[in-house]
Length: 283
Image (cartoon, rainbow, N blue to C red):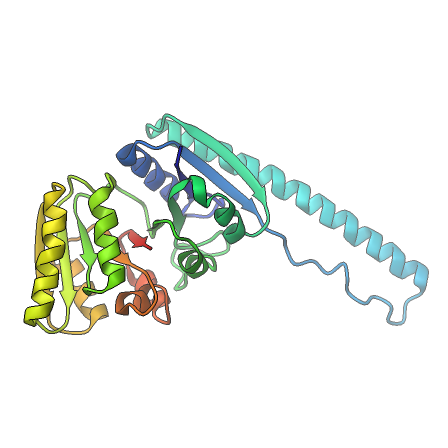
């Protein structure tokens, strides 16, 4: 059975990630897995301590550093368990029924890759445990996860509330068509009004592609408003989101897509930092 995987790290967004994952689990009728990844910290036990001190002193310092590393690893393990237990209690209170706690050692991206076959959706926070809520940055894992994972990724950017509508950033290319197909076949957003937005020139060919995408969604029961807005992708999407009080944005992410360039390329930071709504990336 496939699961919703919520990446929990004890950061300021952990509660938001948990809330978002519970919502997704309910929408998709999937079990929920709360994942905490214990990544290796950079230590200095291999530093050259010879200098001007004697051999015995150097060996003593190395032993002390090894001991400190072991204590640090033990505390990190216990902290992770507490983080997961707190998240589980919060998820149960929010209405989750099937919850699994999973703590893994190693890189988060590798862990998610190992779990990919049993994953239906990944939920992750925009900021990691090393960032304050108002930090003008994103967590170091966001772009790596988006590039590596072939599963949909829901990025929580602030306190999460169940969306009452959503917008699809559509450019008529293969990645966007794949996103349309996945949204149409998934219960995650079913029942929510959909805004299908294309930026740029309103040509006959592009209008036909937009209408085709709209028809696919409407055949699956979605209520769709479609529009082509002149202008560049980033300002068009940003302004439309504000003008129509959009509460969740979805987009395809694949090679050579203009939309991908904004979400999984050089402008990733700008879009995610400035977004005040959750982002759903579909591969």
